[in-house]
Length: 167
Image (cartoon, rainbow, N blue to C red):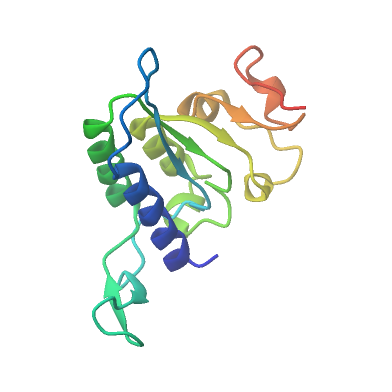
């Protein structure tokens, strides 16, 4: 997935989360789930933004400023301001195959940014294993993201009691 595609997909998901929700049923709590995936340590937005179909001119395209961790964090903050019962989760590939800015530092900058955004849980994707299947994620990295969910992955034994096993 290209940087432009993931950025556009993320913006679309966040825009959906920003839509007005139907009135909750009495005795229930409405929860907004914000989900990201395939970040791949792309902390900076892609040069020139993303190219999307121009809604005002069918058959033409337009560049839209999108992507980058600062823009993502801003959108998450805006949605949370309108929907206080929200949770940010991820479906994996947040790290690995990362640009130099994050990859050179073993994706610590990405994990720190996700932590500051309040990422509650993440599944592991194949790119979390780019450093090898036996690589253990350090305690500081695991604390950056509350829970990594994966079936018996090498992440599991690092922090017993905090990491859930999915069977």
